[in-house]
Length: 618
Image (tube, rainbow, N blue to C red; front, side):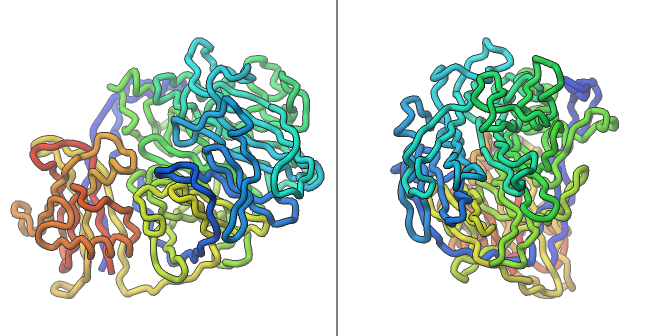
Protein backbone atom coordinates (compact mmCIF):
# COMPACT_ATOMS: atom_id res chain seq x y z
CA UNK A 1 0.00 0.00 0.00
CA UNK A 2 1.29 3.48 -0.77
CA UNK A 3 -0.07 6.75 0.54
CA UNK A 4 0.85 9.17 -2.22
CA UNK A 5 0.17 12.81 -1.50
CA UNK A 6 -2.28 15.46 -0.48
CA UNK A 7 -4.07 16.78 -3.52
CA UNK A 8 -4.67 20.37 -2.54
CA UNK A 9 -3.32 23.18 -0.41
CA UNK A 10 -4.69 26.62 0.31
CA UNK A 11 -2.83 29.70 -0.95
CA UNK A 12 -3.61 33.24 0.03
CA UNK A 13 -2.04 36.40 -1.26
CA UNK A 14 -0.50 39.18 0.75
CA UNK A 15 1.61 42.23 0.10
CA UNK A 16 5.07 41.28 1.29
CA UNK A 17 8.17 43.42 1.35
CA UNK A 18 11.32 42.37 -0.44
CA UNK A 19 13.73 45.31 -0.25
CA UNK A 20 17.22 44.62 1.10
CA UNK A 21 16.64 46.04 4.58
CA UNK A 22 12.94 46.05 5.40
CA UNK A 23 12.02 43.68 2.55
CA UNK A 24 9.14 45.80 1.23
CA UNK A 25 8.37 46.02 -2.47
CA UNK A 26 4.60 46.25 -2.54
CA UNK A 27 4.41 43.23 -4.82
CA UNK A 28 1.76 40.58 -4.20
CA UNK A 29 3.20 37.18 -3.39
CA UNK A 30 1.73 33.78 -2.60
CA UNK A 31 1.87 32.74 1.04
CA UNK A 32 2.98 29.10 1.29
CA UNK A 33 0.79 26.86 3.44
CA UNK A 34 2.81 23.63 3.21
CA UNK A 35 6.42 24.57 2.51
CA UNK A 36 8.26 21.24 2.59
CA UNK A 37 7.46 17.59 1.80
CA UNK A 38 7.16 15.00 4.58
CA UNK A 39 10.36 13.51 6.01
CA UNK A 40 10.47 9.76 5.22
CA UNK A 41 11.40 6.94 7.57
CA UNK A 42 14.83 5.46 6.99
CA UNK A 43 15.85 1.80 7.02
CA UNK A 44 17.98 2.34 10.15
CA UNK A 45 16.89 1.68 13.74
CA UNK A 46 18.73 3.28 16.65
CA UNK A 47 19.41 0.95 19.57
CA UNK A 48 19.18 2.69 22.95
CA UNK A 49 19.97 1.62 26.49
CA UNK A 50 19.37 3.40 29.77
CA UNK A 51 22.63 4.95 30.98
CA UNK A 52 22.07 7.23 33.97
CA UNK A 53 20.07 10.12 35.41
CA UNK A 54 20.54 13.27 37.49
CA UNK A 55 18.64 14.29 40.64
CA UNK A 56 15.34 16.11 40.29
CA UNK A 57 15.48 19.88 40.76
CA UNK A 58 11.72 20.40 40.38
CA UNK A 59 8.78 18.65 42.01
CA UNK A 60 6.77 18.98 38.78
CA UNK A 61 7.65 18.41 35.13
CA UNK A 62 10.23 19.02 33.81
CA UNK A 63 11.88 17.53 36.87
CA UNK A 64 15.55 17.77 35.87
CA UNK A 65 16.38 20.23 33.10
CA UNK A 66 19.44 18.52 31.57
CA UNK A 67 20.77 20.84 28.88
CA UNK A 68 24.15 19.35 27.93
CA UNK A 69 26.13 16.15 28.38
CA UNK A 70 29.84 16.54 27.59
CA UNK A 71 33.19 14.97 28.52
CA UNK A 72 36.04 16.69 30.32
CA UNK A 73 38.23 15.69 27.38
CA UNK A 74 41.19 15.06 29.66
CA UNK A 75 41.60 11.36 28.94
CA UNK A 76 39.74 10.23 32.06
CA UNK A 77 36.49 9.45 30.23
CA UNK A 78 34.50 11.47 32.77
CA UNK A 79 31.10 12.81 31.67
CA UNK A 80 29.33 15.89 32.98
CA UNK A 81 25.75 17.17 32.71
CA UNK A 82 24.27 20.53 33.64
CA UNK A 83 20.76 21.25 34.90
CA UNK A 84 19.36 24.63 33.85
CA UNK A 85 18.23 25.07 37.44
CA UNK A 86 21.83 25.66 38.43
CA UNK A 87 23.88 22.54 39.09
CA UNK A 88 26.50 20.51 37.22
CA UNK A 89 26.90 16.78 37.79
CA UNK A 90 29.59 14.17 37.25
CA UNK A 91 27.75 11.36 35.48
CA UNK A 92 28.66 7.70 35.18
CA UNK A 93 26.73 4.59 34.28
CA UNK A 94 23.86 4.34 36.75
CA UNK A 95 25.09 7.16 38.99
CA UNK A 96 25.62 10.92 39.27
CA UNK A 97 27.13 13.26 41.86
CA UNK A 98 27.28 17.03 42.31
CA UNK A 99 30.36 18.64 40.75
CA UNK A 100 29.55 22.37 40.79
CA UNK A 101 26.67 24.31 42.37
CA UNK A 102 26.66 27.41 40.16
CA UNK A 103 23.34 28.64 41.53
CA UNK A 104 24.57 28.38 45.10
CA UNK A 105 27.61 30.49 44.21
CA UNK A 106 25.63 33.17 42.32
CA UNK A 107 23.22 35.32 44.34
CA UNK A 108 21.65 36.91 41.24
CA UNK A 109 21.22 33.61 39.36
CA UNK A 110 17.97 33.45 37.36
CA UNK A 111 16.37 30.27 35.98
CA UNK A 112 12.85 31.47 35.12
CA UNK A 113 10.86 32.42 33.16
CA UNK A 114 11.89 31.00 29.81
CA UNK A 115 12.55 27.48 28.57
CA UNK A 116 16.27 28.23 28.22
CA UNK A 117 16.88 30.47 31.24
CA UNK A 118 19.39 29.41 33.90
CA UNK A 119 22.67 27.47 33.73
CA UNK A 120 22.64 27.21 29.95
CA UNK A 121 25.93 25.61 28.92
CA UNK A 122 29.48 24.61 29.78
CA UNK A 123 32.66 23.64 27.96
CA UNK A 124 36.03 22.36 29.13
CA UNK A 125 39.13 24.01 27.64
CA UNK A 126 40.95 21.55 25.32
CA UNK A 127 43.94 21.82 27.71
CA UNK A 128 41.81 21.24 30.81
CA UNK A 129 44.04 18.39 31.97
CA UNK A 130 46.89 20.88 32.49
CA UNK A 131 45.24 24.29 32.95
CA UNK A 132 42.03 23.27 34.77
CA UNK A 133 39.92 25.79 32.82
CA UNK A 134 36.15 25.25 32.62
CA UNK A 135 33.74 27.77 31.09
CA UNK A 136 30.06 28.18 31.89
CA UNK A 137 27.20 30.38 30.71
CA UNK A 138 24.22 31.36 32.84
CA UNK A 139 21.45 33.92 33.27
CA UNK A 140 21.19 36.64 35.90
CA UNK A 141 18.65 39.29 36.81
CA UNK A 142 18.82 42.50 34.75
CA UNK A 143 21.15 45.07 36.27
CA UNK A 144 23.18 42.48 38.16
CA UNK A 145 26.38 43.80 36.61
CA UNK A 146 27.78 46.20 34.03
CA UNK A 147 27.22 44.75 30.55
CA UNK A 148 30.02 44.46 28.02
CA UNK A 149 27.38 44.20 25.29
CA UNK A 150 24.29 46.42 25.54
CA UNK A 151 21.21 46.51 23.32
CA UNK A 152 21.55 48.61 20.14
CA UNK A 153 18.84 50.91 21.47
CA UNK A 154 19.99 51.45 25.03
CA UNK A 155 16.57 52.82 26.02
CA UNK A 156 14.98 49.39 25.47
CA UNK A 157 14.19 47.48 28.64
CA UNK A 158 16.52 44.65 29.65
CA UNK A 159 14.88 41.37 30.69
CA UNK A 160 17.94 39.25 31.40
CA UNK A 161 21.73 39.21 31.48
CA UNK A 162 23.86 36.41 30.08
CA UNK A 163 27.23 35.78 31.73
CA UNK A 164 30.34 33.75 30.82
CA UNK A 165 32.46 32.56 33.76
CA UNK A 166 35.92 30.98 33.70
CA UNK A 167 36.49 28.47 36.49
CA UNK A 168 40.01 27.26 37.30
CA UNK A 169 40.13 23.95 39.15
CA UNK A 170 42.84 23.56 41.77
CA UNK A 171 42.92 19.86 40.90
CA UNK A 172 41.52 19.07 37.42
CA UNK A 173 41.22 15.38 38.34
CA UNK A 174 38.98 16.03 41.36
CA UNK A 175 35.36 14.87 41.19
CA UNK A 176 34.09 17.95 43.06
CA UNK A 177 35.09 21.43 41.90
CA UNK A 178 37.36 23.52 44.07
CA UNK A 179 39.15 26.56 42.75
CA UNK A 180 38.63 30.12 41.54
CA UNK A 181 36.32 31.94 39.15
CA UNK A 182 36.41 35.11 37.07
CA UNK A 183 33.90 36.78 34.79
CA UNK A 184 34.82 36.99 31.09
CA UNK A 185 31.87 38.90 29.67
CA UNK A 186 28.28 39.94 30.35
CA UNK A 187 25.53 40.80 27.86
CA UNK A 188 22.13 42.45 28.14
CA UNK A 189 19.20 40.60 26.58
CA UNK A 190 15.87 42.05 25.51
CA UNK A 191 13.82 38.98 26.49
CA UNK A 192 13.82 35.76 28.48
CA UNK A 193 13.77 33.58 25.35
CA UNK A 194 16.46 32.90 22.74
CA UNK A 195 19.23 34.13 24.98
CA UNK A 196 22.78 32.89 25.54
CA UNK A 197 22.80 29.30 24.30
CA UNK A 198 25.64 26.81 23.84
CA UNK A 199 29.28 27.69 24.42
CA UNK A 200 31.82 25.30 22.91
CA UNK A 201 35.37 24.82 21.68
CA UNK A 202 36.14 23.40 18.25
CA UNK A 203 36.95 19.80 19.13
CA UNK A 204 38.29 19.12 15.64
CA UNK A 205 41.04 21.77 16.02
CA UNK A 206 44.51 20.59 16.95
CA UNK A 207 47.15 22.35 19.03
CA UNK A 208 48.78 24.93 16.79
CA UNK A 209 45.65 25.49 14.67
CA UNK A 210 44.28 29.04 14.62
CA UNK A 211 40.97 27.79 16.04
CA UNK A 212 42.48 25.80 18.90
CA UNK A 213 41.28 27.16 22.24
CA UNK A 214 38.85 29.66 20.72
CA UNK A 215 35.48 29.74 22.51
CA UNK A 216 32.28 30.05 20.48
CA UNK A 217 29.17 31.59 22.06
CA UNK A 218 25.72 31.13 20.54
CA UNK A 219 23.48 34.16 21.02
CA UNK A 220 19.77 34.10 20.19
CA UNK A 221 17.83 37.19 19.18
CA UNK A 222 16.52 37.60 22.73
CA UNK A 223 12.97 37.35 21.44
CA UNK A 224 13.42 40.83 20.01
CA UNK A 225 11.54 40.16 16.78
CA UNK A 226 8.50 38.54 18.38
CA UNK A 227 8.48 41.32 21.00
CA UNK A 228 8.28 44.04 18.37
CA UNK A 229 11.94 45.08 18.23
CA UNK A 230 13.11 43.51 14.95
CA UNK A 231 15.74 46.21 14.55
CA UNK A 232 17.76 44.74 17.44
CA UNK A 233 19.07 41.83 15.39
CA UNK A 234 20.48 41.17 11.90
CA UNK A 235 23.16 43.82 12.39
CA UNK A 236 26.85 44.01 13.22
CA UNK A 237 26.52 46.37 16.18
CA UNK A 238 24.33 43.91 18.08
CA UNK A 239 25.27 40.67 19.80
CA UNK A 240 21.71 39.33 19.52
CA UNK A 241 21.25 36.73 16.79
CA UNK A 242 24.96 35.99 16.39
CA UNK A 243 27.67 33.43 17.03
CA UNK A 244 30.57 35.09 18.84
CA UNK A 245 34.16 33.81 18.88
CA UNK A 246 36.62 34.84 21.58
CA UNK A 247 40.00 33.84 23.00
CA UNK A 248 39.26 33.23 26.69
CA UNK A 249 42.97 33.34 27.51
CA UNK A 250 43.55 36.68 25.77
CA UNK A 251 43.24 40.29 26.96
CA UNK A 252 42.57 42.42 23.86
CA UNK A 253 38.84 42.92 24.52
CA UNK A 254 37.42 46.24 25.70
CA UNK A 255 37.13 44.90 29.26
CA UNK A 256 40.52 43.17 29.14
CA UNK A 257 39.09 39.84 30.31
CA UNK A 258 39.36 37.94 27.01
CA UNK A 259 40.86 38.30 23.57
CA UNK A 260 39.26 39.19 20.23
CA UNK A 261 40.87 36.87 17.64
CA UNK A 262 42.41 38.89 14.84
CA UNK A 263 41.12 36.44 12.22
CA UNK A 264 37.49 37.14 13.15
CA UNK A 265 35.69 38.67 10.12
CA UNK A 266 35.18 42.15 11.62
CA UNK A 267 38.02 42.25 14.15
CA UNK A 268 40.17 44.49 11.98
CA UNK A 269 37.61 46.34 9.85
CA UNK A 270 38.39 49.71 11.44
CA UNK A 271 34.72 50.33 12.24
CA UNK A 272 34.19 51.13 15.90
CA UNK A 273 30.46 50.40 15.54
CA UNK A 274 30.86 46.74 14.61
CA UNK A 275 31.60 43.98 17.10
CA UNK A 276 34.88 42.24 16.36
CA UNK A 277 33.71 39.24 18.38
CA UNK A 278 31.06 38.32 15.77
CA UNK A 279 31.87 35.20 13.72
CA UNK A 280 28.53 34.93 11.89
CA UNK A 281 25.10 36.52 12.29
CA UNK A 282 21.46 36.48 11.16
CA UNK A 283 20.26 33.77 13.57
CA UNK A 284 16.98 33.52 15.46
CA UNK A 285 18.12 30.93 17.98
CA UNK A 286 21.39 29.11 17.20
CA UNK A 287 20.64 26.54 19.83
CA UNK A 288 23.54 24.10 19.33
CA UNK A 289 26.88 24.03 17.51
CA UNK A 290 29.21 21.20 16.58
CA UNK A 291 32.18 20.41 14.38
CA UNK A 292 32.77 17.24 12.44
CA UNK A 293 35.79 15.59 14.04
CA UNK A 294 36.32 13.71 10.78
CA UNK A 295 35.50 14.39 7.15
CA UNK A 296 35.82 18.06 6.19
CA UNK A 297 35.57 19.31 9.81
CA UNK A 298 32.53 21.43 8.97
CA UNK A 299 30.85 23.57 11.64
CA UNK A 300 27.09 23.15 12.04
CA UNK A 301 24.47 24.95 14.07
CA UNK A 302 20.91 23.83 14.72
CA UNK A 303 18.59 26.83 14.59
CA UNK A 304 15.11 26.79 16.15
CA UNK A 305 12.56 28.46 13.88
CA UNK A 306 9.62 30.76 14.45
CA UNK A 307 6.41 29.09 13.25
CA UNK A 308 7.43 27.19 10.12
CA UNK A 309 11.01 25.99 9.55
CA UNK A 310 13.72 24.23 11.60
CA UNK A 311 17.25 24.66 10.28
CA UNK A 312 20.64 22.98 10.08
CA UNK A 313 23.18 25.60 9.00
CA UNK A 314 26.78 25.20 7.91
CA UNK A 315 28.53 28.06 9.69
CA UNK A 316 31.24 29.98 7.87
CA UNK A 317 32.88 33.21 9.06
CA UNK A 318 31.23 36.44 7.94
CA UNK A 319 28.01 34.91 6.64
CA UNK A 320 24.50 36.28 7.27
CA UNK A 321 21.99 33.46 7.84
CA UNK A 322 18.86 35.42 7.03
CA UNK A 323 16.94 36.03 10.24
CA UNK A 324 14.76 38.05 10.61
CA UNK A 325 14.02 38.48 6.89
CA UNK A 326 14.21 34.76 6.13
CA UNK A 327 13.03 31.60 7.85
CA UNK A 328 14.66 28.63 6.20
CA UNK A 329 14.58 29.13 2.44
CA UNK A 330 11.54 31.40 2.66
CA UNK A 331 10.70 35.07 3.17
CA UNK A 332 9.17 36.20 6.47
CA UNK A 333 7.79 39.62 7.41
CA UNK A 334 10.19 40.79 10.13
CA UNK A 335 7.74 43.49 11.23
CA UNK A 336 4.72 41.23 11.79
CA UNK A 337 4.07 42.81 15.20
CA UNK A 338 3.73 46.31 13.74
CA UNK A 339 2.63 45.49 10.18
CA UNK A 340 0.57 42.29 10.34
CA UNK A 341 -1.09 43.16 7.05
CA UNK A 342 2.20 42.14 5.39
CA UNK A 343 2.06 38.69 6.98
CA UNK A 344 2.00 37.23 10.48
CA UNK A 345 4.76 35.10 11.98
CA UNK A 346 2.85 32.05 10.72
CA UNK A 347 3.19 33.26 7.12
CA UNK A 348 6.12 32.52 4.84
CA UNK A 349 6.57 33.44 1.19
CA UNK A 350 8.67 32.38 -1.81
CA UNK A 351 12.10 33.89 -2.33
CA UNK A 352 12.15 36.84 -4.74
CA UNK A 353 13.67 36.52 -8.22
CA UNK A 354 16.62 38.70 -7.18
CA UNK A 355 17.30 36.85 -3.94
CA UNK A 356 20.97 36.32 -4.81
CA UNK A 357 21.54 40.05 -4.39
CA UNK A 358 20.74 39.98 -0.66
CA UNK A 359 23.69 37.80 0.32
CA UNK A 360 21.91 35.45 2.71
CA UNK A 361 23.22 31.96 3.48
CA UNK A 362 20.52 29.30 3.67
CA UNK A 363 20.22 26.03 5.63
CA UNK A 364 21.94 22.92 4.32
CA UNK A 365 18.99 20.90 5.69
CA UNK A 366 15.56 21.90 6.94
CA UNK A 367 12.16 20.52 7.96
CA UNK A 368 8.83 22.22 8.57
CA UNK A 369 6.36 22.26 11.42
CA UNK A 370 4.28 19.46 9.98
CA UNK A 371 7.13 17.32 11.37
CA UNK A 372 8.15 19.01 14.63
CA UNK A 373 8.39 22.39 16.32
CA UNK A 374 11.93 22.85 17.68
CA UNK A 375 15.13 21.22 16.46
CA UNK A 376 17.45 19.53 18.96
CA UNK A 377 20.90 19.78 17.42
CA UNK A 378 23.21 16.80 17.67
CA UNK A 379 26.51 15.57 16.29
CA UNK A 380 28.12 13.89 13.32
CA UNK A 381 28.76 10.36 14.51
CA UNK A 382 32.42 9.29 14.50
CA UNK A 383 32.24 6.59 17.17
CA UNK A 384 32.85 2.86 16.83
CA UNK A 385 29.86 1.07 18.38
CA UNK A 386 27.51 1.76 15.45
CA UNK A 387 29.31 1.54 12.07
CA UNK A 388 26.04 2.18 10.21
CA UNK A 389 25.90 5.66 11.77
CA UNK A 390 29.39 6.84 10.84
CA UNK A 391 29.24 10.08 8.86
CA UNK A 392 25.62 10.81 9.75
CA UNK A 393 24.57 14.02 11.51
CA UNK A 394 22.11 12.91 14.20
CA UNK A 395 19.56 15.35 15.57
CA UNK A 396 15.95 15.39 16.72
CA UNK A 397 12.96 17.48 17.69
CA UNK A 398 12.66 18.83 21.22
CA UNK A 399 8.88 18.62 21.36
CA UNK A 400 7.89 15.19 20.03
CA UNK A 401 11.28 13.48 20.33
CA UNK A 402 11.43 12.21 16.75
CA UNK A 403 15.05 11.46 15.79
CA UNK A 404 16.50 12.39 12.40
CA UNK A 405 19.71 12.18 10.43
CA UNK A 406 21.30 13.60 7.33
CA UNK A 407 24.46 12.35 5.66
CA UNK A 408 27.34 14.73 6.42
CA UNK A 409 28.66 14.21 2.91
CA UNK A 410 25.39 15.57 1.50
CA UNK A 411 25.69 18.88 3.36
CA UNK A 412 26.71 21.44 0.75
CA UNK A 413 26.38 25.19 1.06
CA UNK A 414 23.68 26.47 -1.29
CA UNK A 415 21.52 23.32 -1.30
CA UNK A 416 19.34 21.38 1.12
CA UNK A 417 20.22 17.76 1.86
CA UNK A 418 17.50 15.13 2.35
CA UNK A 419 16.56 14.26 5.93
CA UNK A 420 15.35 10.85 7.15
CA UNK A 421 13.81 9.61 10.39
CA UNK A 422 15.20 6.93 12.66
CA UNK A 423 13.18 4.17 14.18
CA UNK A 424 14.02 3.42 17.83
CA UNK A 425 14.44 0.39 20.04
CA UNK A 426 15.02 0.55 23.78
CA UNK A 427 16.48 -2.67 25.18
CA UNK A 428 15.50 -4.37 21.92
CA UNK A 429 11.84 -3.26 21.97
CA UNK A 430 10.42 -0.93 19.27
CA UNK A 431 9.27 2.36 20.76
CA UNK A 432 9.50 6.15 20.42
CA UNK A 433 10.98 8.85 22.65
CA UNK A 434 7.46 9.81 23.70
CA UNK A 435 6.85 6.19 24.61
CA UNK A 436 10.10 6.03 26.59
CA UNK A 437 9.51 9.28 28.45
CA UNK A 438 5.76 8.92 28.82
CA UNK A 439 4.90 12.51 27.99
CA UNK A 440 3.85 14.34 24.82
CA UNK A 441 6.66 16.92 25.18
CA UNK A 442 9.95 15.08 25.40
CA UNK A 443 12.51 17.91 25.85
CA UNK A 444 15.32 15.82 24.39
CA UNK A 445 18.93 16.92 23.89
CA UNK A 446 22.03 15.14 22.54
CA UNK A 447 25.32 14.52 24.30
CA UNK A 448 28.68 12.90 23.50
CA UNK A 449 31.67 11.29 25.22
CA UNK A 450 35.42 11.14 24.63
CA UNK A 451 35.07 8.12 22.35
CA UNK A 452 32.62 9.88 20.03
CA UNK A 453 29.64 7.86 21.26
CA UNK A 454 26.34 9.71 21.46
CA UNK A 455 23.63 10.01 24.09
CA UNK A 456 20.08 11.32 24.32
CA UNK A 457 18.99 13.21 27.42
CA UNK A 458 15.52 14.36 28.46
CA UNK A 459 14.37 17.06 30.88
CA UNK A 460 11.05 15.58 31.93
CA UNK A 461 12.58 12.97 34.25
CA UNK A 462 16.29 13.74 33.93
CA UNK A 463 17.27 10.45 32.35
CA UNK A 464 20.11 9.73 29.94
CA UNK A 465 20.10 7.07 27.22
CA UNK A 466 23.10 5.86 25.28
CA UNK A 467 23.04 5.01 21.58
CA UNK A 468 24.69 1.59 21.67
CA UNK A 469 24.25 0.58 18.05
CA UNK A 470 22.10 0.61 14.96
CA UNK A 471 20.47 -2.05 12.87
CA UNK A 472 19.05 -2.13 9.39
CA UNK A 473 17.72 -2.35 6.91
CA UNK A 474 14.25 -2.91 8.29
CA UNK A 475 12.04 -5.35 6.45
CA UNK A 476 10.78 -3.90 3.18
CA UNK A 477 7.56 -4.90 1.42
CA UNK A 478 6.62 -4.74 -2.25
CA UNK A 479 4.65 -1.59 -1.51
CA UNK A 480 5.94 1.17 0.77
CA UNK A 481 4.15 3.94 2.62
CA UNK A 482 4.74 7.54 3.58
CA UNK A 483 3.26 9.64 6.35
CA UNK A 484 1.38 12.59 4.90
CA UNK A 485 0.49 15.62 6.99
CA UNK A 486 -0.47 19.23 6.52
CA UNK A 487 -1.45 22.03 8.85
CA UNK A 488 -4.01 24.78 8.31
CA UNK A 489 -6.71 26.88 9.91
CA UNK A 490 -10.36 25.89 10.15
CA UNK A 491 -12.69 28.84 9.74
CA UNK A 492 -16.42 29.15 9.41
CA UNK A 493 -18.67 27.79 6.69
CA UNK A 494 -16.74 26.23 3.83
CA UNK A 495 -13.38 27.31 5.27
CA UNK A 496 -12.17 23.83 6.24
CA UNK A 497 -8.94 21.85 6.10
CA UNK A 498 -9.12 19.43 3.19
CA UNK A 499 -6.52 16.75 2.52
CA UNK A 500 -6.72 14.25 -0.28
CA UNK A 501 -4.75 11.01 -0.28
CA UNK A 502 -4.53 7.96 -2.50
CA UNK A 503 -4.23 4.32 -1.48
CA UNK A 504 -2.58 2.50 -4.35
CA UNK A 505 -3.04 -1.19 -5.12
CA UNK A 506 -5.08 -3.70 -7.07
CA UNK A 507 -8.83 -2.95 -6.77
CA UNK A 508 -10.47 -5.26 -4.26
CA UNK A 509 -7.17 -6.15 -2.59
CA UNK A 510 -6.72 -6.07 1.17
CA UNK A 511 -4.59 -3.04 1.92
CA UNK A 512 -4.07 -3.05 5.65
CA UNK A 513 -4.66 -0.43 8.30
CA UNK A 514 -4.49 3.35 7.91
CA UNK A 515 -4.28 5.80 10.82
CA UNK A 516 -5.88 9.20 10.11
CA UNK A 517 -5.63 11.96 12.71
CA UNK A 518 -7.21 15.43 13.03
CA UNK A 519 -5.18 17.09 15.78
CA UNK A 520 -6.12 20.37 17.44
CA UNK A 521 -5.79 20.15 21.24
CA UNK A 522 -2.71 17.93 20.75
CA UNK A 523 -0.97 20.82 18.99
CA UNK A 524 -1.90 23.13 21.83
CA UNK A 525 -0.18 20.78 24.26
CA UNK A 526 3.00 21.22 22.20
CA UNK A 527 2.84 25.00 22.50
CA UNK A 528 1.04 25.93 19.28
CA UNK A 529 -1.33 28.85 19.99
CA UNK A 530 -4.82 29.31 18.52
CA UNK A 531 -5.55 25.63 17.97
CA UNK A 532 -8.93 24.13 17.09
CA UNK A 533 -10.45 23.03 20.40
CA UNK A 534 -12.71 20.28 19.04
CA UNK A 535 -11.99 18.97 15.52
CA UNK A 536 -14.39 16.70 13.66
CA UNK A 537 -12.85 14.29 11.13
CA UNK A 538 -14.75 13.01 8.10
CA UNK A 539 -13.50 10.63 5.38
CA UNK A 540 -15.04 10.67 1.90
CA UNK A 541 -14.60 8.34 -1.06
CA UNK A 542 -13.95 9.93 -4.44
CA UNK A 543 -17.20 8.50 -5.82
CA UNK A 544 -19.29 10.33 -3.21
CA UNK A 545 -17.90 13.70 -2.05
CA UNK A 546 -21.12 14.51 -0.14
CA UNK A 547 -21.67 11.65 2.28
CA UNK A 548 -18.79 10.67 4.56
CA UNK A 549 -18.00 6.98 4.90
CA UNK A 550 -16.28 7.44 8.26
CA UNK A 551 -16.59 10.12 10.95
CA UNK A 552 -15.01 10.73 14.33
CA UNK A 553 -15.40 13.41 17.00
CA UNK A 554 -13.16 12.86 20.05
CA UNK A 555 -10.80 9.95 19.55
CA UNK A 556 -11.53 6.63 21.17
CA UNK A 557 -15.30 7.09 20.82
CA UNK A 558 -17.73 6.18 18.05
CA UNK A 559 -17.48 3.61 15.28
CA UNK A 560 -14.09 2.43 13.96
CA UNK A 561 -12.23 3.93 16.90
CA UNK A 562 -10.64 2.04 19.75
CA UNK A 563 -8.39 3.92 22.16
CA UNK A 564 -6.03 1.03 22.91
CA UNK A 565 -5.60 0.11 19.24
CA UNK A 566 -5.08 3.76 18.31
CA UNK A 567 -2.39 4.14 20.98
CA UNK A 568 -0.60 1.03 19.75
CA UNK A 569 -0.82 2.14 16.12
CA UNK A 570 0.40 5.65 16.95
CA UNK A 571 3.43 4.27 18.77
CA UNK A 572 4.20 1.85 15.94
CA UNK A 573 4.33 4.59 13.30
CA UNK A 574 6.09 7.13 15.52
CA UNK A 575 3.22 9.62 15.74
CA UNK A 576 3.46 12.13 18.57
CA UNK A 577 1.29 11.31 21.56
CA UNK A 578 -2.04 12.91 22.41
CA UNK A 579 -3.66 13.05 25.82
CA UNK A 580 -6.19 10.46 26.90
CA UNK A 581 -9.69 11.86 26.57
CA UNK A 582 -8.63 14.81 24.41
CA UNK A 583 -11.00 16.23 21.81
CA UNK A 584 -8.68 15.29 18.94
CA UNK A 585 -10.30 13.11 16.27
CA UNK A 586 -8.65 9.88 15.10
CA UNK A 587 -9.72 7.00 12.86
CA UNK A 588 -8.01 3.63 12.47
CA UNK A 589 -9.32 2.15 9.21
CA UNK A 590 -8.82 -0.64 6.70
CA UNK A 591 -9.15 0.96 3.28
CA UNK A 592 -9.30 -0.54 -0.18
CA UNK A 593 -7.30 1.05 -3.03
CA UNK A 594 -8.75 4.34 -4.20
CA UNK A 595 -8.82 8.10 -3.71
CA UNK A 596 -10.03 9.54 -0.42
CA UNK A 597 -10.58 12.96 1.09
CA UNK A 598 -10.13 13.83 4.76
CA UNK A 599 -11.90 16.96 5.98
CA UNK A 600 -11.55 18.73 9.33
CA UNK A 601 -14.32 20.99 10.60
CA UNK A 602 -14.87 22.53 14.02
CA UNK A 603 -17.58 21.16 16.27
CA UNK A 604 -20.24 23.76 16.94
CA UNK A 605 -18.60 26.21 14.54
CA UNK A 606 -15.27 26.25 16.40
CA UNK A 607 -12.31 27.71 14.51
CA UNK A 608 -8.54 27.37 14.88
CA UNK A 609 -5.35 25.66 13.73
CA UNK A 610 -5.27 21.90 13.22
CA UNK A 611 -3.27 19.27 11.37
CA UNK A 612 -4.31 16.29 9.24
CA UNK A 613 -2.02 13.25 9.39
CA UNK A 614 -2.27 10.00 7.44
CA UNK A 615 -0.14 6.96 8.34
CA UNK A 616 -0.06 3.45 6.90
CA UNK A 617 0.23 1.30 10.01
CA UNK A 618 1.37 -1.92 8.35
